[in-house]
Image 1 (cartoon, rainbow, N blue to C red):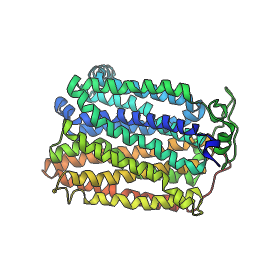
Image 2 (image 1 turned 60 degrees about the vertical axis):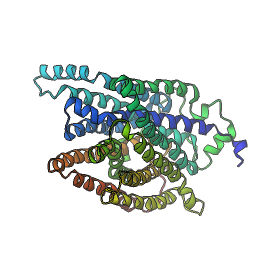
Image 3 (image 1 turned 180 degrees about the vertical axis):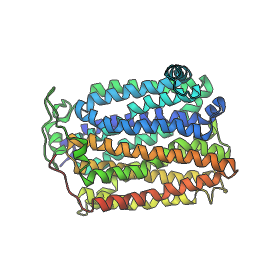
Image 4 (image 1 turned 90 degrees about the vertical axis):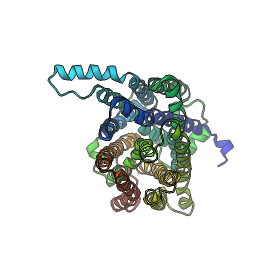
Length: 455
């Protein structure tokens, strides 16, 4: 079908999802970029920092579970507005973490509970609020993609909006250290956090369900529904289809997605939260010194996100169904992170060696992520996509908590022995091997494609 006849409004929605994901990652990365300075100011150990980041991941994990249900119930438009409002307020809240910590400790003390240092309590609470809102981004974005794109285009669209994570990760090291240097670390959280409210205004204007989208023609709507059964959108105020978590957990497809996320999400969290500290601890880079290395590294990941989203079409065009094409692509992608095993052995040459090798591994993660998300919309009906993504997101978040806590313990232990490079070698090895292990688990659970039609 001719693209001019079909129309292209669905790509406007994809652009909105891209910018939402960019803001999402801008907000969550501010802390990691200021971690070295904040650790000195407040006397945090690596374990303290791991506990703060783990608080984000823990709340994010459980919020993802409920976010999917809320999104399926409220609908994509209202749920996204709620999510970005909460996470923008949580991002700004970091600027007032000391006051938040004092208030929280006062409450804990009045209840006879153990208090923690004010700075740690305040940042943990701020991270928790940020996580509560940010958990809504990916379930809502995947649901919007399932609504606006036919199956054959979904992984490509997912790769595009998912590359917003990379753009956010690129923009953060360029902007955050400069803002902090000019106006202090508090303003970095406030300015970056406020961007979400601008996006929210655009979303309110341009998004509606495809069936009710006045800016989109019938030809494009028919194209969107061309390779799947059309399920009428419930009328405003009408009850939406509900599927219990227990029923969803009865499907091997749910477990395949959840285990794939559990095994691999922590790798991206580790890169995102620990790379600035790694460059500081190993090479003495800090502040504005890390702008160029991190910008280069995360620029590389954009190639993986968009290229990985396109990659399955090679197999689909050769006759594979969408799921089988994605699994073949994911197997190829799973071998790429093995290059991270070389980051420590050859890191003595220059800090650019681990930056490039980790960049390749992180790029592979984004390619993997673009595809694993899309396996859900391949197999599950649209009204349950948010819930399944939420279940997988919770599993991924818990995997991230475990990997972050392990990293904090290893770095304090080996750092105390003067051998912190050993700690990083262990963590890089886990990151390198995670994808092959995850693919084998997923393939053993769902060896062949089967679309779920009984929900």
